[in-house]
Length: 410
Picture 1 (spheres, rainbow, N blue to C red):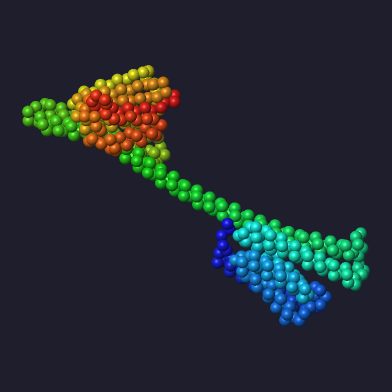
Picture 2 (picture 1 turned 180 degrees about the vertical axis):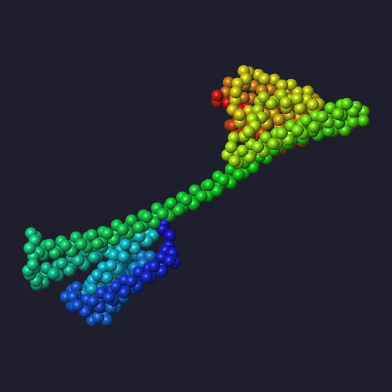
């Protein structure tokens, strides 16, 4: 429904009413001064001014009460003609505005339609009464008539056509104004919906990016810090009894720290390149780096086997990176929590999928006995991006299994 008129529009209506009233006063003064009355004679000038005020004043509230203004102005228009006031121009303008406003602002469209039709029918009925009175009375000769039509018929047709165009124009332009306002409101509503949708999309994109960054940082940091913690603990225990073994463990800590820093730099470089709209400078981690993960897990004291099954083939970089991160996180949990002695990393190239699996012979729990840690959540999020599946849970005999399947459409 069309919104109510604003304060500015209501002030504009008052100005229009004052303008019409001013026009009525000026026209009445001119008509009376020239003695050219519409109906041949007219009541006293003061009464004519009163009629002009009565017809013009309702226009001050035409948008707030369009139906009432239409009915009042229509009734006053007929009454003024019945009284044979000297001017008919300004009342016609007021009636046109009333019909137009009812079509443009009446919120009940059924009432708007039938009220205008009723007023138009009443006006044509009044016109018909005037024509009948004219035909029934003495008729003045049309001394200057030279056209092909009968003068009386031509005069009647002229009045009918003129009034028909007059009322149809007010009716049509009123409906057009209503439709224009309705479309404008709809466009504003859709624009607001679009703005909110864009805000929601932007907010969702920001949250998704934060989750991705947190996931990547967790994958990079947790794995290497876990290995460093295990090696540092081993070095502390054998520092006095076996300095050579302690030195080797500390060397592993040093190498792992350098690797972690390198991966963090690579991650930050990728993020910075994405922010700048440039391609990242370094190749992201992938399946080719899995042997390095296996080697680092071995240095933490776990026997890890790495096997590749099926015919190796290129897979999308995003899939390769996600598979790498899944194996990395699974091995991190094996090192940190599983208390396992052996683990296996299997990569399977299936017909339409890539499958990575990490199993161990540990306690059969993930991340300190919880299956709802950030690592498992990160795995699910990574795999969900590619439409894959994750199976994570204790094995039947002993240990834990993490199996991720990534669809590959190559």
